[in-house]
Amino acid sequence: MRIFVSLLLSLVMLNAYDFNTSKLATSSVSKWQDVDSEIQQFIIKHDKIIKERFFPVIKQLFSILSDEEKAKFKTPKLNYTRDDIRVLMTYTKYLIDQNRTQEIPEIYVRVMDGINRTNNGDSFITLIFKIVMSKITLESLEYDLAYFKQEERAKLLSQSPKLFELSLAEFDKTLERTTKTLVKEYKSFLIKMFPKERVEKITAKLEQKALDYNRNSIALENIEEQKKFRQKIESDEKRFFEKYKTDANYFYDNLVKYSDNNRSTFKELNQTQVTTQQKLSDEVIIDTIFYTAFLIRSVETQEDCKKVIELNNKVLQKLKK
Image 1 (cartoon, one colour):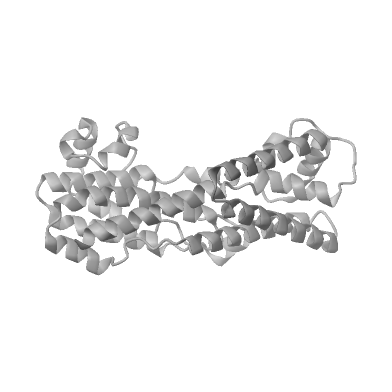
Image 2 (image 1 turned 45 degrees about the vertical axis):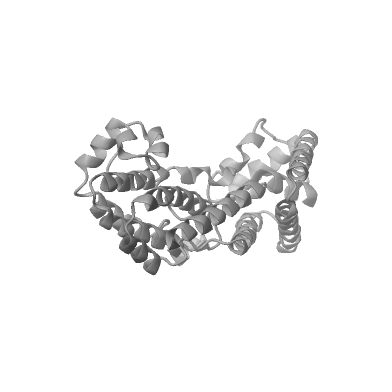
């Protein structure tokens, strides 16, 4: 998802981690004795302050945007990373080892409340991270349940009766809102470049093309059909840029002059300097934007969402036993 890459850079809690963070992926679902020694040392050292540092931050997965930021199509900042949540989930393994399981339900309740509270708004990226963070938390909780006493199960269930609140309906609505918002963002650039009536026509076709792509892609349940659909789109994209490379570059050069920032979305188009004035067709403008900004891998993300929903139901049933 090209337009959202910058969001992978975010706040690191408890200062920079001084251990191999790749080992956190297994430590959050392992016995404390099997956790990497450097991670163990880090958690033991910060035992008294982990909750103090984490609890305020996990209240909200993403920052809340002001009306001014929304008007400028800003993307909310991620407040904590996958490594951060895995540190917290590994901390529960330490609490199990220390026979302090009574402290664990509060950790899960706070994490789940914060993630459930996240408003997807018009951003698909918020839903993606909700899926990612929910999966990490659920996998950890499924492991920890074996060590919960009945009163600890009851406490967690009473405060988070559904655990995570994810649905495919939410997925579909968020994807549609994201598409429409992104079209509005490009409209704000195009309106500075072309007559209003032309921009209205261009953005209406762009929105319909993007919505059709998303709806058609997620409607395919057969893996082979999904693969063929993706291959066709990629083939169409390649043929388009082979045929209209000069026009696409010319459009890009003009777009960056009128946009608030140099969008990295189009960097692959800026291979040659276009100096000749050209009359761009609506179709070239539409397809240039579509192929560089709207080819969200919605099928893969929808599958991830389905798996997390299934895992949530599985863990919920285990919690009720």
